[in-house]
Image 1 (spheres, helix red, strand yellow):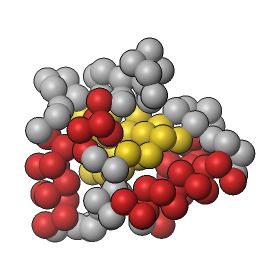
Image 2 (tube, rainbow, N blue to C red):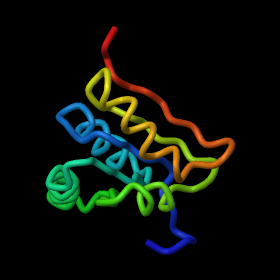
Image 3 (tube, rainbow, N blue to C red):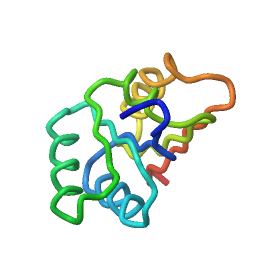
Image 4 (cartoon, rainbow, N blue to C red):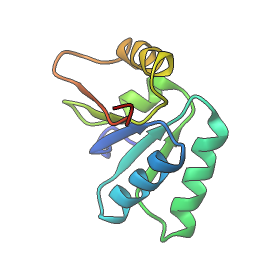
Length: 110
């Protein structure tokens, strides 16, 4: 992905809800970058995007390249298990975020 071709949004957390939301966003024509701590989930989501119409979905195995692939100010939807995984994901991504970037916690704990 070239610097002139950045994603509009990022999504971290590719369990069932995260995968489906990412694919839905891509299906609407919005380029999206995806990341998951378990890299096999990233690969699975990228394969689904190809099968479902070569959708503009881009997978990343490391948090730095994931964050760098999103246009500024960055918006990242986070759909990870409530509790410690939320805190860990925020900590992991925050290292690469800048002032004005936004993480949306889309988890459904409450």
